[in-house]
Image 1 (cartoon, rainbow, N blue to C red):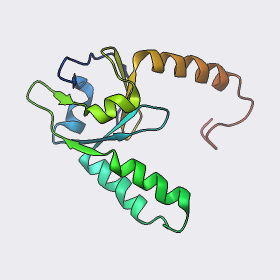
Image 2 (image 1 turned 45 degrees about the horizontal axis):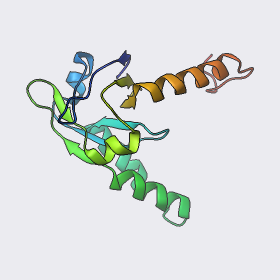
Image 3 (image 1 turned 90 degrees about the vertical axis):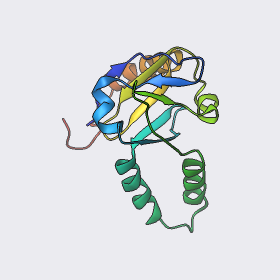
Length: 143
């Protein structure tokens, strides 16, 4: 399971060092793709196969379903980290997520997310205050 918040830097070649706590999950290879909220989703190859399998069972009869699958998969790229735990974030994904030198990488359970730090801080501030004010269950049966 991928957990925690980390602050890696993007180097001049578009590479990021994976947090040590994520290394076991991603050492054999990973898949990056467009996430929601302008971040990059990072899956282990094994987990991405599960996501793709679930997607392939979705009906292609709705425009929204077709469009989501197209956008999600067309942005996907397989990467293998080097011996220094660095992985290249493709330029298309860097542009999509507005990634510059300062990054925030979070563990989101079955995936990691890479955010521009300013965008993450803005998202966190806006979302946390709304979450704290919620008067009902956000995830049914959790609390």
